[in-house]
Image (tube, rainbow, N blue to C red):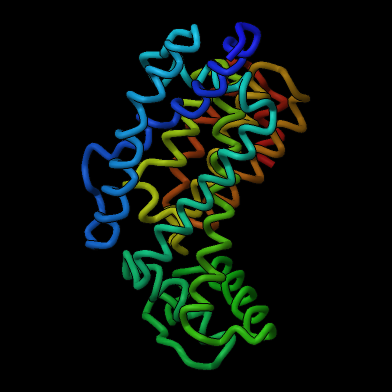
Length: 288
């Protein structure tokens, strides 16, 4: 290999090694045996390649990054601007893969708060729990899921596994959006290096992936919450119009509360951030 080729190759290998330590599950969070095997397999592949990649970087005249932060910062040059979109796609793909491998349910709420009422709306059968009879829950999530089931049914996808896959695919796509929003928020606040670390952890952490592609309000509410913090930051530092940024943050916070009533507690911190920054127009737009 010529000397002119050696230097550009090192950043590319940095890009490959950057996510490696972040993929390493130090603890097996999965209760399901198949998930244990999946994460163990990922760990085996990753750990077996880290040393080899580091040695290759050194042989090509580069310096092997010793931490995720250093490697992640260097990875932007190799990935290019489209790298974050690839990471968002990876986030959704991993979430979907875990849901497909695990199948079944991870929590009773995804069945009785979402899937059963949605199935009843479309096919006429499904358990109706007391929360629905008493009107304690809203129909936003079951309604959207019912729409997905209706579309799947119209396309001839009627097997339970096929219907479950459609729902998991939609939830996984939303988690990819959350990864993208998280990257942009941390990048605008702390820089590219920390943004890559945060996004990599969100995309690959095993404990989160178990729930990421599930129709659980606890997981779904994260998507608008991260977006709300992104726009709150933009309103606070003045990179966008106060009115625009405050309004977008307010809409996203409202959606987060609709998805999960418990998310109302998250209204306090963005509002306080704007008050402390004296962004009164943004605060007013958020409140409206």
